[in-house]
Length: 290
Image 1 (cartoon, helix red, strand yellow):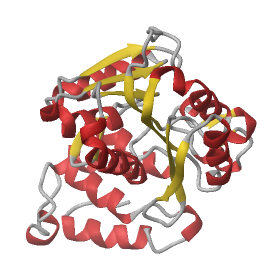
Image 2 (spheres, helix red, strand yellow):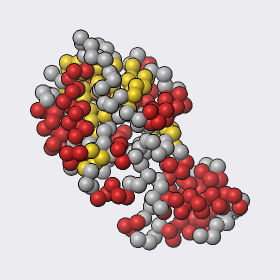
Image 3 (cartoon, one colour):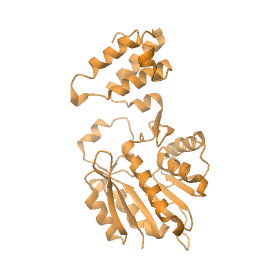
Image 4 (cartoon, helix red, strand yellow):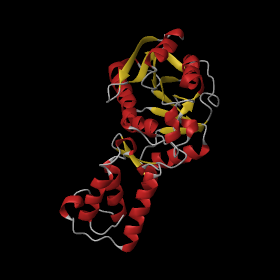
């Protein structure tokens, strides 16, 4: 791939993204990577088309394109991903935050606004926090309302990333704990949390699409029992930690809505319903503890 000016690169990107749709990468990956390499704002793609890349910029750009074509996501090349208007560091120890997960954040905030007068503890638990995108986004929105967020993850490396992200986004009202789901949390006489949220692994271990997700940690993506094992564990133990009337909100696969709603109902949750993502697929199921 011959590289010289922004104009020529844009032409080459069009050629790259007009081929086989099955193996096509999003065009913005290439333009965002270009902007990252040359350290220019997006407007430069229109106003600075004659900009000539240096030899080192050319080499870096070409190397990144090759990595993306080999399956490395853009966010792992830049080391960052935007989510809920905040910027999150990501690496091979964390999943890359997806736009559809913002639906989970949005639904939790909507529920809080509707229930505000009835909430007592103002404590929220995020299970399997990864990069911390859910916990930190919610803590950021709720810090002036005196909420305390607890975020757990089994991976110490993921927790390092999440702690960095809390500091970089100026969020102090979140505590990070290394734990396999609820394991390291104290069991108190009274439930501690008004809300429990989670985006757990939910892809079936036999799903053929996992073969294409070579860069992200598989343990954070897939689960036994058709992808439902971790969700089942979270739901079945939630009432030990969740106040009466408290909210449980879980992200899941597009074809798991029926099964997850049944898990909620089997464990005594009320007002159980599923919300669709921006693509119209079942994505987040919510219910309230009795």
